[in-house]
Each structure stands twice: as C-alpha cells, then as structure tokens.
Length: 139
Image 1 (cartoon, helix red, strand yellow):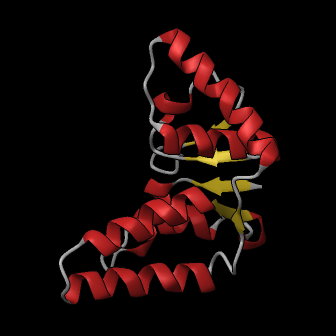
Image 2: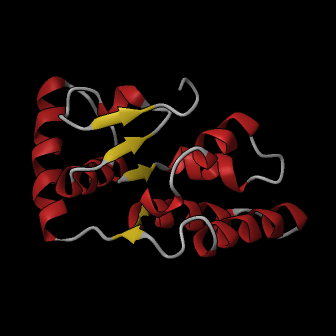
C-alpha cells in the first residue's frame, strides 16, 4: 500500500500535470494507491479558500476526478490506531525540536497504523519515523 501525500495529490490534480509524477503513478498498480482523510481535508479546504473562478473550478474538477478515478474512494481515515501512532510521532518530533504540523503528524500516524509506504516530496518531515518513504520527484 502506498499513501499519496498532499503534495503528490496536488501535483496530479493540476490542469498542467507534472508528467514525471503522472508516469510514476502510472507505473504503480492503482489498487495499491491510497490517500488519507487528512489530505482530503487539506486539499478541499485549500480549494474552498481560493477565489471563485475558472482556476478553482478546474482544480476542483481535477481533485474530484482523482477521488473517483485513480483513487476510486481509497481514502484512509484517521482512526483510533492512527491517533495512537500520531501521538508518539508528535512526542518524538517535539523532543527532536521538529515542528512538522498536525496534518503531517496525522498522516504519519495513518501510515504507521497501516504499515504503508508514504509517497511525498517532503521527506524531511517524515524522516526517522520508521515509515517507508518514496519521493516521486526523485524516483
């Protein structure tokens, strides 16, 4: 299972898609690609805060297409086991002096609870957390 972080989903939903990211995703079995309810929140919230207009409409359509198409509803929830893992991630990161933000802490908790690989551009935010990481921009 590969969890697509917010930055990967964002790259895929743009009208001018990053071809290297599209090729990276296309090389993976789509049934193994997931995202999280946290990413759904971050993206949807960002879109709703955008000024109304053609760009917002195009990005919303791209996001909705990803949810229905590539992801086919594969959105992992932030549940009890995820919260337990996230609490430990938060403690560890604070002890290290790293402030990665609650969204990334929750995504890390979900990845740990699912024993999943996280595809992200922000490797430093998840480094040393016992999460298998992939960087689609480098792979």
